[in-house]
Amino acid sequence: MFDIDGTLTESNTVDDASYLQALAEVLGFTDVDGDWSQYPHCTDEGILAHLFQTRLQRPPRTEEIAAVRNCFVELIGRSAEAAPLRMIAGAAEFMAKLAAEPGYRVALASGGWERSARLKLASAKLDCREIPAAFADDGHSREAIMQSALARAKSQFGVPHFTRCTYIGDGIWDARAARQLGYRFIGIARDDAKRQRLVDAGALAVFADYRDAEQMWQVLVSE
Image (cartoon, rainbow, N blue to C red):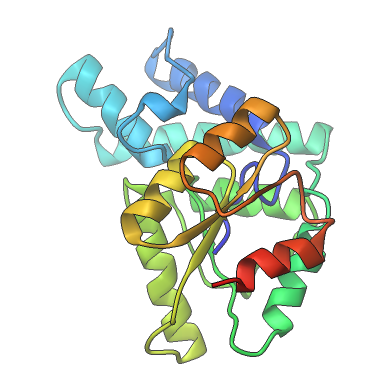
């Protein structure tokens, strides 16, 4: 099960800037802390809900969520049109290898809204349209999103039970959610400090990208 931003696509910088800009343009929310690890739920829906609760003491209305989401998607689209996003090196090949392996299935579980996530995947030339997936539209918490992705994988592939699940992500929140659900976790990070945080959070291993596919595969199949 794969995260998207920073895991399959090199989109964290664009994503963060666009989200903060959408909050400011639509809601007038400025001085927003961009350290997403400090929020109870690091998802587009979860962050928005927390900001509304702390600033306005109420949950966001449906139309407010839609307005922020629409602005965010537009900003992502403009950025991707000006400078197409890149996939994390080797991601497409590694996902294809997994999908071809007997006994393994691939799913996506992203903390981003579906429209923006699909746009980023398309910009990075990653065709994931046939892969079961769940997004921030499916729940505030990353755990809920991951559980939705798992349920959709079971349904799509006709598998009543998976022996185990491994989540591949780049954020400390990914590692926490995986631990909470009892999933194994593999990290993606190039920065040494970030790599260490993921190891400390329980990552089986941390890779800069997917080019060492054989080593990553060995970690994935290890007991």
